[in-house]
Image 1 (tube, rainbow, N blue to C red):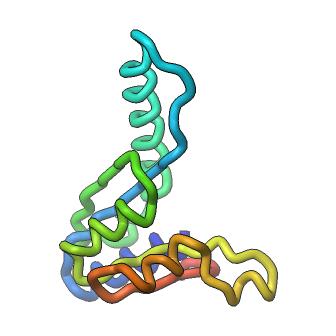
Image 2: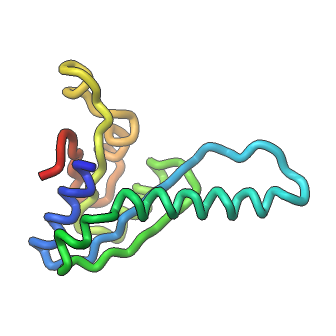
Length: 127
């Protein structure tokens, strides 16, 4: 939530469009004739998760246009690709506890080295 709050605030300050990217990479189990339906259902569920995460923020920042992007793939690869067309990439940190909160997660660490634009790792409570 801290990353979403920071991203909305920055987009508002910059008068920029916000692209909210949500990705998942856990494969679906099984296959056969129902595999396509299962992928579509999973994608719809992931779109709902993103919409729920963004709920309320548009009301606080009505000047920010939001484009929602949901994509299956490894988070580093999807966000690295998104960074190629971005002015700023904002990701969250799941650090827990005093020591863990000082460390970057695997996704943010990889993006620190591979993002094509400036990166912000937001942690804590949104403002």
